[in-house]
Image 1 (tube, helix red, strand yellow):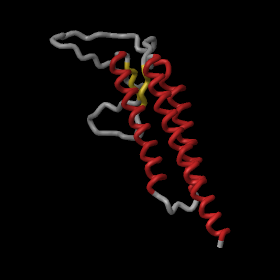
Image 2 (tube, one colour):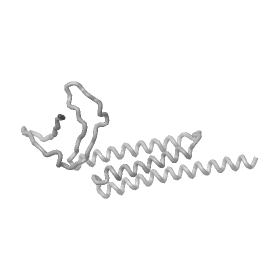
Image 3 (cartoon, helix red, strand yellow):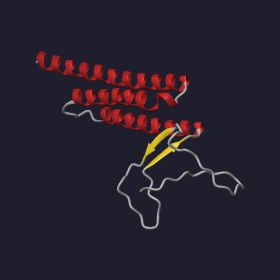
Image 4 (cartoon, helix red, strand yellow):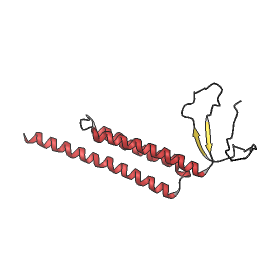
Length: 152
């Protein structure tokens, strides 16, 4: 039988508080590495965050990290002009942006305010726009190369 704990931090209180944690609703966070076993330590499989401000900060951090990773992916596309399959790389980037959009809607929408959702949608639209602009740029460059070879 696994033990379940609730950690409550309150200043200068010396009492134990019990909650019916099965009935609490909050943001579920699972451990990234499930096989870590430390000697003389508590192994945590799942955390339920109840504090709304902490949920907001956690979700914003996760979203910002994912957006940063998408921007890095797009930057790598821009910085590699000798890519043998730029269209495939762009399609991969567009698929990643779309996957990110669906993931954010499915996972975090119930915890986000309307303003946060609008801001996130604007950021996603900008990422999609950048991928589309890069696709047009690569297409124009290919057509220019084709025309220059055809003229010879």
